[in-house]
Image 1: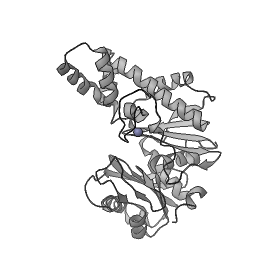
Image 2: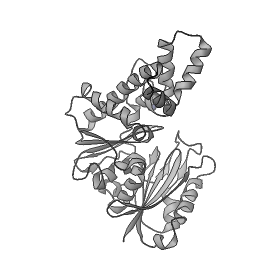
Image 3: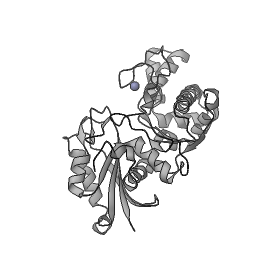
Image 4: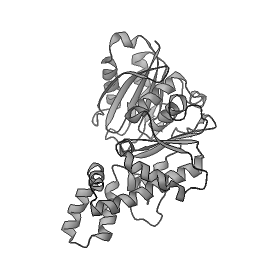
Length: 322
Ligand SMILES: [Zn+2]
């Protein structure tokens, strides 16, 4: 059996999987992403994980794909000034390729994931697909007319920074005002909670701070919402509209046949996502695509990165040498 190595460099976790030419994960290991070290610390940790897969497996690998948090310099395969890791700048392509001596590709994590959906997943047989992640950040990858969109540095479709409220004073991690990610990513839901609680809770400032802490953690927020808690219902109602408006904006721009959503917020809260999908129709101009949760769950980037190695998009080959 021919195998491909799919590597997911996330904000929280590193995941490495051996994937067959049909998109099946044969073996998989993960660890925490290092947040301290130098330019090669993360690549070294990836190599350590790969070695855990076993020597007999490694000899069958034909190619290596990496899907990583951005922003990315697609030519050098380096992550540049990322807000999602304290190391900020790190190399992936060169250190991994020189150690494994195999064709290696590095792309943005959502670019990897959408290619996986295109070849093996929710977009199989279709030409227009968007993969969206709702996680600690918000991002997307797009295949339009069978072509993957990359952009000049590999950072096309930074949809988390779509402006959803131009009069908002909430600042995104990138510095812009009123961005989708500033309200709705796992890291920033607290901003939305803060705004809603200030509007609806007529209590002291100390109590407000307590409420923001209570509802600011996404997992706690969704658990309280399922229990019928009053404040969480108001917050989640807002969150549904924000995500529906963001998803509709993405549909309006890319006109996909299928939009597949992954990331921890989506895959851990399918009931919430179903309600989001139901109200997207109020915000779109293009006809509605099929809206699904990724069939690959938390392995969407691993499988997608392997898909990049299995069939490298020609748009990527023009920008990155193996
Ligand atoms: Zn932003």
